[in-house]
Length: 375
Image (cartoon, rainbow, N blue to C red; front, side, top):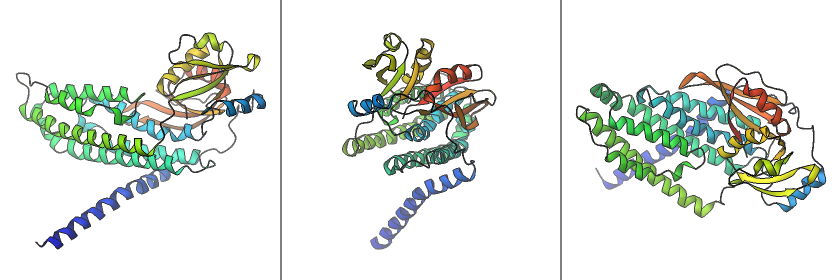
């Protein structure tokens, strides 16, 4: 074969690969839009009630950098969390079940359905190209990873499941890493995960007497390679972000009324910023899961929210066994059974911030709060 012919083949396969990769978000979103419903576009009830003094609101936006976050971000952060939930539900599944039985394709479809729903929810907001580009990239990576794992676990993985007949040391190690990864993602981006360290730990697993040598070697080879690739990809992402992106906002500014100073006194990484007396107070705290966990504690202490991130509506999700009845001051955005555990249902609700102190207690009898998407 001539060098020119070889070069043409390489270019041809490279073009095919690029086309396939670019087609994933197009086909994914087409599937997402075709399999989800349009949304109610009427104004959310409760947002107009208890509106804060405009002068104070303007003062906060002018004096506190980062106080006002784009309201559409409460929706556009959800697809990122959908990947976190996929990792969490995978970890819960493989704790007891075989990897080959995990519904990989259902989680691929679920991501694109979630993203399509969030596009609908933000249709009246300015289009943020960088934000959507990022979601498309992580969705494409999520799709490719799940397709590869589905194909591998249902061929080579199934063979070694059969030769092993039981869960062995490498299976238990992998399940533990999956649980660590899922917990890690609650607060830290995936590319910070120590894949190289986990690879070394996998290689150090000693086969116990009676454990299958074929399964042990296969898991070490396959997942050792996967960890090596992921560590290299993570390093590349970190370098690219350091060179091209501003640091992520890790804090959220919250305007609330009631005994704010006393309520936040015991909360870590939380500071009172401004006290307006009868008009409430503003505090700053960490975002993500720690803020979600804090909200019910503050409500129980008499705190009533005015604005979160400078906005008066926010998305939250709850988990339940049955379909929920949306409380006043909310709108049901979506609801579905978890593919890996159909006995559990996830529901997404748009909520008026100033109704949170009534909405969360009303939901408590029906469901468990999963996350509040803090822009």
